[in-house]
Length: 154
Image (cartoon, rainbow, N blue to C red; front, side, top):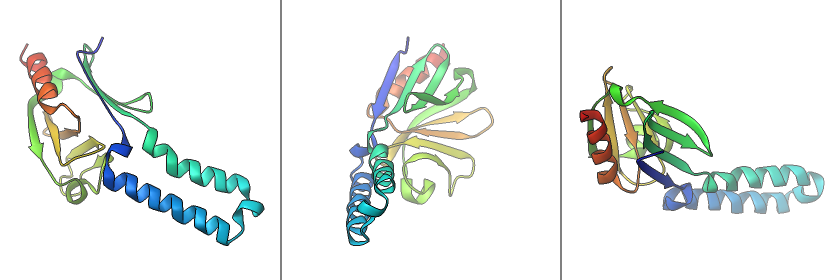
């Protein structure tokens, strides 16, 4: 049973949603212009599904007895053991510059960092024993910081 749970969606990020919608419009126009609807309707359907699906795939971050779980589309992407966490803080950062955007990202400027975010320019940063940093984007940052601190200090 999780003691903390956050669910975020890509469509909550205005930049990402706008980019996907513009791409979707461009694909539809190109399929009409090239008569792709008649030539390869299955390709049109798959292409549209690939552009629309990311908007509705949830990223879930939970703190439970097994640790901090990051999930995407109902599958666990990563589990972080609470005993590996040595520090937790809320931090402002630049997602585009430091990680190349939002999502499941590896650090561009921080080679020893990973980010699991969908929106915003602030995150809860976990520092692990091996000095790696994990950026977690959640709606209730103070709640996650407090939950992790209570678990780590216990």
